[in-house]
Figure 1: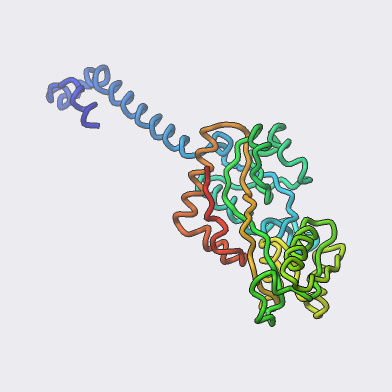
Figure 2: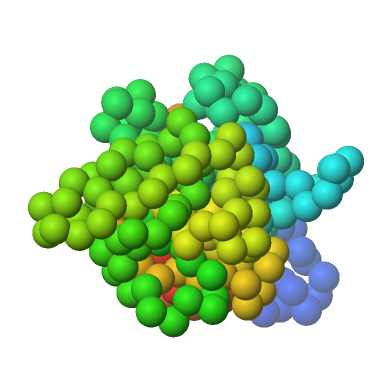
Amino acid sequence: MFEYASRLPMVPAKNLITGNYMTFLKTVAPLLCGTLLSIGIAFVAHAASDRPEFALGGTLKVCTAGDFPPMQYYPNPGDTDLVGFEIDVINAIAKKWDAKAEFVVGDFKGLLPSLDSQRCDLVASGIMITPARLEKYDGVPYFGSKVVLLVPNSDTESQITDDMSGKRMAIEAGTTYEKTITNLNAKLAASGKEPVEMQTYPSASGVIEQILVGRAAGTITQDTTAAFRMLQMPEKMKVAYTYDEMETYGIYMRRNPGDRHLVKEAIESLQASGELKQLLAKWKLPENATDVPHD
């Protein structure tokens, strides 16, 4: 402001005192108006630069499948409002951009194409970051998920998967966890130990039921699923072992380096403030699940 003030012409005081305002209006006023206008434009431009283009209207449209608890789901049949860790994260990001999140629920396989059709601005649905997807869309990783061994809370002995030797385990049919048990049995056989007796069930809820009634010693599942079950039934089950391999979930958007940077910046801000850690604790998810590189 001082730089602009030094450029203003001197106006004799008597011109103002005697009511001769014409000189002032013709010389000083236009400069002041121009200065204030430029400051206003700069302020608006700065404010806009803090938000991606798609959030400037005040609404952030996010596509999700809405069927992956505790990430995003409907608590009860007939509910219209989604809840979950991922929902909370998106709402926190929208708040940073002075916007309101609007969730568009659809079939999982149609989520990314919804970006192309402008049906939504972001996709957040427990969707993995993969090289193939990144060839067409921008994505920001923010959550790491791992496979775990879930056992009854009363089990005080099981600490590693080898401890399942000679026991019966319930596994959801058609999942990759069947192969996990096959690999475990090969390892146990090589060590001269009894194999796991694997029994498969058509649903995840059926698997959990077998554990609760004592017909199965445990199951192999994703840490997100384990978290939801423990949230539903506190003190009934616990994670005995976590595998090293990690799948990384992310938020996808249309290709735009500037928008991607702002999404990444928002996530990093939530991480630095501790808000992500609070949300992880709220949904019983692993406390280090969001400790992933965001590039």
